[in-house]
Image 1 (cartoon, rainbow, N blue to C red):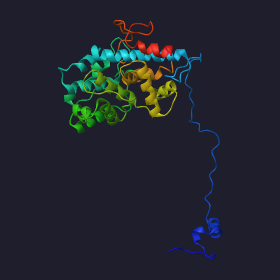
Image 2: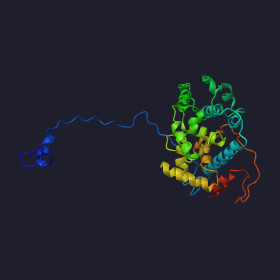
Image 3: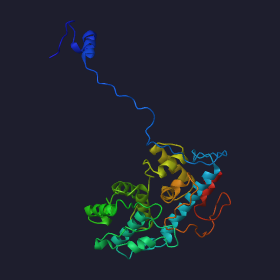
Image 4: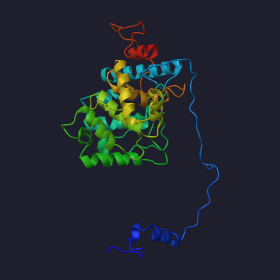
Length: 327
């Protein structure tokens, strides 16, 4: 029932009675405001090369030709790496691509390579080779004293927690093959995106997930193709993409990455994806050596490309250098 006040108005609409009620309400004591910033807050600045007047519509965030050349080299390396993975995979990747072997063992080996990350050494796969265990045995690798690569997802404090979570994830689907295949009606791009989401296991960060799916697709184990960069997390890959492409919105980042891939005549956005997981995250933020992820740091140049717009080194992928550095 509506309540009327002494002024013959609805109690909720009477300005006099409403003001009196607000004055009668007890006020909570105000808390003193904290002065200054907390001691735990640290502000970091990313090193930038000097602005020398470089401008490009493809990478509007870059203002230095040195940063553009570094990004172009990373993209060229990533494009060539994808080609070599499909044609002549190095090291243990060749075993993953061997269709005569059991697909469960091949998938498990690919996971270990992505999880531990190849070393930057003469034998990049030494650690994986020493610690690997057969998938069928159910035994976990001994990782207490294992040497890992620069993009590893392994954490000594976590132990084998990520490996156990991966086995549990595969067992829920019935097998690794069923887990990575998903729905038969999915396109390779949709399969990549869905499996990427489902592989959000404890400790299995973006770089390792992307590297695993890209390598499985490039080596022909499953039909997987990256249709997006899966940006948006607080990692150096997303930070570098925002800096190079000059935008923070994830949807616009994906759109500009697609435009860059199309202009550079790379196979697909997988090349840019592998660049970010294999060192491109720091390509525009530092001059540190890029992780090669088990690939030779310099590929032997194949036959020259036909129809090149300018005279650049005749290696596949150097069309990226041509576009980024000359635009």
